[in-house]
Length: 370
Image 1 (cartoon, rainbow, N blue to C red):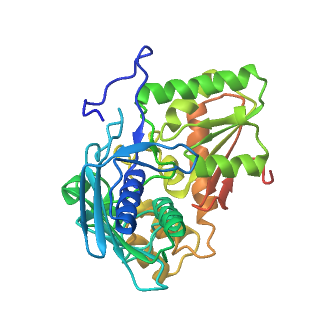
Image 2 (image 1 turned 180 degrees about the vertical axis):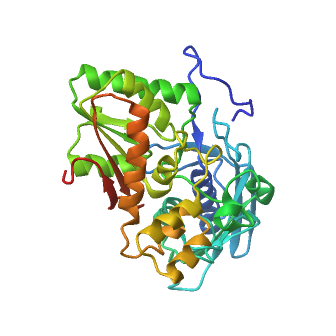
């Protein structure tokens, strides 16, 4: 593994991908549980990622004692400027009570969720669902192979994780005590702003060349999958704009298409609605006060407004909206910003908002139905 500093993209030397904290925790869990069952640590540990890749990890440190084992891996984030690059991710595995299944615990340097609105419940270690599933699958596989019950307690730790978390949004989101164990694919794909924006422009060019009349700019995979299903869009119609809404809109203004859908999660589209064209958490923030005013205009009760104004995130505030059409209101405000950015371009535009499960929770634009 390399500890070189992240570098700028170069056509001659493509940026190197890396591994998420979730992938590292899974590999460490596999090594520790395997040693617990066999008495030996593997020299190299191979895991299978959600999309089928099989990376190999080298163990940094190991420890085996009666009833428990620990393995540590140094995270390699490739050429991405990841705050946890070179962090030491540890998994300690202990045999649990028979029938208890797999349980997850936060060790030193891994945060605990203290506020509602995240994918993990309050009081739980900040280990996201996909890494949990990956580790549980590893345990099941090894238990089946060695005739064990698979009842284990897994504690994930990250050396200096609490200090690293100070450079993230964890504190504001109510994740205290360390970093989160993240990743949906297991792979860290490095993008510089220039490289990502170039890919957006290329996507528009390809869509236009293919005669695609309706394209969708999405903030991530969930909104991409949801808007594709909603409108039956083809592959070339999908433009992953990520945080770079402005880059997409300004380019389409100069290179118009017949129809554009802007799709994203509630928090990202809330930022767009408030006039931000760069949706990155380090460069724009959701204004909870503005969202609370939307609820007031929609007839929110005093109790709802009190809860909303104290919300720590857009997602948490959304839970207080109940049946009030806050998603539609935010989508309408975002549509105004989109049209303003597009100027006088003759483009039919709509905005769609999806929740984390991909369900439509807000829409604004000339097309009420897909």
